Length: 245
Image 1 (cartoon, rainbow, N blue to C red):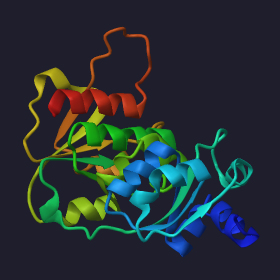
Image 2: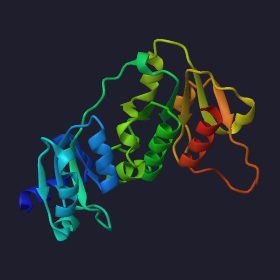
Image 3: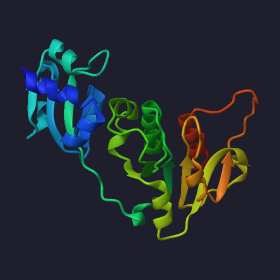
């Protein structure tokens, strides 16, 4: 059974301001919640169907949980087709340290589409890119569409929100900064340094001029067909990470 106040609270977390105020976000679906339970994230509460709770009771330990009907799950879900379980998760922000940015660090300049960001997080998980730096105007990683499209990779990749100009200005060491542009060196002809920053720009406007100032090497993905105007930012990221990781 779920109370009206609990329903109101869960629905309110669809808004970023409420996620910030409550320091909580929502995860839905069996696969996502199973990934959550394997992670180090702090679970506030779980709402699951009786079948799901019965099958997973041994994994819940001291976690607060409630059995809900399919109809109740439908009411609180943000999915068109709810999937047996929903979890409230406490937001925990990792402490940022430049010294922990080993290997390739992906820098995202005003990525607005939640599906793109979720896919990029999943790509970083696949290619073992451990850290993503997002501009402050990028979409919130706890947006429900970001969470769902990351498919659990959100729990394994460190993601920080920074003023990118200050981030690069304050960086205590010199690392090559690569940026993606329609004009630049073909990625086939560039060898990325072991420790480096790669910037991916906004879906419509590319890398902003204030951030472009810090780019050392301009990269380009060959337009073999010659007709498409541009690549989706998540698609471009997948090509770059495959080439360099």
